[in-house]
Image (cartoon, rainbow, N blue to C red; front, side):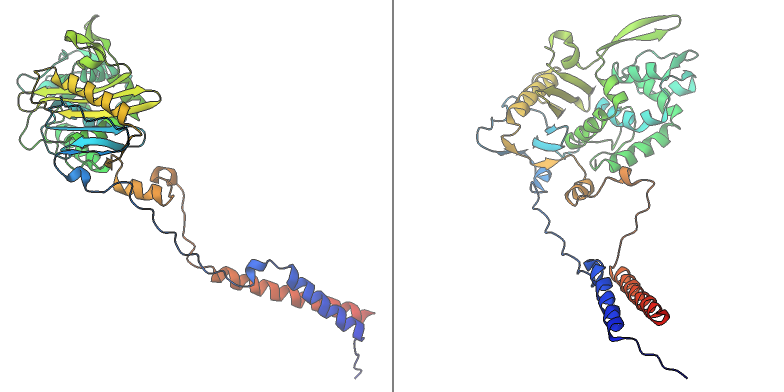
Length: 388
């Protein structure tokens, strides 16, 4: 047996190459870096319970205007439509009958399920059960209507007859009620209880200025909803003819001597003898959009709801940037997701994301790879030296 010894120079080259191989490895695999502590959560932008308190809630800063003294509504709210921040409110969560402003929630619920260009022939049964004294657009049994025509009947004429037909197409009256309740909860509107989708007075049917503002803000984000609610005048079919219908929101049309509000976008008004006058409005000015909801003014007659809304819109545009928000129309879960930098659920749909619970498996694999690389280099060098 012959024993061969490597020259000293070969041994040195082997060691040197092994050291070089280790040096070329990324420094991050030498050891797993400890997880960084989570950053502290920023303080809340506003006390979370202010809107739960009765009375007027405002946090004025330097130069903030006073709340208009002529507002007599039992409940009202002013908010920024883009951010959802509430600039001011009065009895924001007081539960009151909403009248036809509840049709905004009905539209949010049923619009996505009905094709606007489709046609439907109305039956007698679809027009049964309409409450006495309801506002009507003039839907007739036996006639065919486009779904878009029926929606204009809802938004412009507040037609309970159109609501009954659309609710039937949406799966029926009771199913629509259940869907509206679920939609309200999904939007964070916890004061609303739906009994009749058209807003007709019913025992236990309530909403609040907060919830109505939530519905209005959600509606403006839907182009179809926004187009209907801001339409001042349209034609409604009647056989081979048609007749004009006008939006009952007088701040939009200027009807009955009410001065139109500049930049008004709609949204929905309502009235019953039990609910009084109710109104959800939105207006744009200087790149800002405000939402105002007003429920049951106690003074000034039937048009007081429009003038009090006007005063609150004027106040809101002056107060923006001069008051600290007292709340938000954005649900708490969504606000927390924004604070933590998480993407909205809709953006994550269809993607499977598994959390990386530990960095140690990756570090161990990297270390094993490094050892194999060094061992392989040593074997190759020795074989070459033995050949020589």
